[in-house]
Amino acid sequence: MPTDIEQQFIDLHPNSRLRHETAKEMFPNGVTHDARRQHPFQLYYTHAQGPNKYDVDGNKIIDFWSGHGSLILGHSHPDIVSAIQNQITKGTHLSGSTDLEIEWGQMVMDLIPSAEKVRFHSSGTEADMMAIRMARAYTGRKKVIKFKDHFHGWSDYVSFDGDGIGGIPNEIAETMIVIPPNDISVVQKVLDENDDVAAVILEPTGAHMGLNPIIPSFLQELRDLTLQKNIVLIFDEVVTGFRISKGGAQSHYGITPDMTTLAKILGGGLPGGAVAGKAEIINMIEPSGDPEWDRNRRIAHNGTFNANPLSAVAGITALKLLQNEPINDKANSMGQRLKSGLNGLLAKLEIPGCASGINSLIHLRLGVEHECDREICLMTDRDMKISTDSIRNAQLNLALLNRGVHSGTRFILSATHEEEDIDETLDAFELAFMDLKNQGNL
Image (cartoon, rainbow, N blue to C red):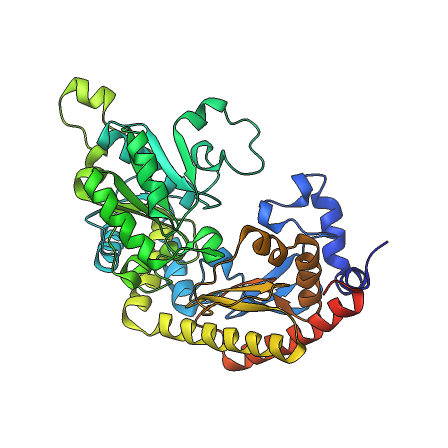
């Protein structure tokens, strides 16, 4: 028996429901990305422009998923569209090098403080896989420290400690060390007990795009300790790169890692990833002429779509706009307006919780009275479990979609969101909160 919110969702989206019935015979759960699983069904979209997208039933939806974080310029930015249209007539894959990859690489080196050299990939998952392998090859050590719940793609090494670990060998655990963040004494203890740690990898703003935030002082402590121990520090800036600031979280906090992984905004909305960092680490790919070294220490790396012309030209266009226009400032200001508005709404409706986050990445936490500075919001495991209650938050997501907003409890702002979009979103949240209260979910 569907809830009232679910029934309204079903009534509003009959054509998406029909497509889901077809898709579930083709794809697991009827979707092609775990994050798109949704009960009773996922929506199907036809087109998008700026901050809005449109579903197959003709509903306009304000989009705060922003291409899973890749679209800080919004949907179908005219400069990106023009660049791709121009390039596609020249070739999508030339099976060789182009001037575009040089220009793209130079843009990365100009913007990202840690980037002495760059190697392109096709996704963030690939970039994280390569960064870890580079660190191991460079140091000659095998273990890697990652932090609890930090997301680094779906490869065996970085996802073995989460849910859905079928097919991952138990032996993987012997090379990975998972610890809680924000306590440098824990890191120190691990390093005292292990002399074969090659690298530490983390999301610099915290797990799940900052839902479980990192204290900025911990980043500096981590930088100091890894330098002292000659351990490679990897910032996973797949989401935060070019978003927290045009130079990423490392520029925002003034802390330079040894290596940085990039994707999402890097490709201007098309597939693209990169590892950037110290030249001597990235150069582990280069042949030396020594057969022993080249066989056992060098990293072989292919990739059919590495730096392909379409992704390169879209990425160049996006990064030039970020470099020369106040794109980040606009997205950040809309994030602040949304955050302030949501906190005011929670107070007005006497709903415990807060909206918090850094710049254009905002998280909504419900159900827990607490104190925070609305930027770095730390919670106990118990309170975090309450604030991320899956049943309540799923109903909220549907109620918002019924009102024309795709956000749930996480918002990824773009520079195309305007004040009226934020105000309309706040109106939708007020109505959605009332829907949840009427259902007994809030």
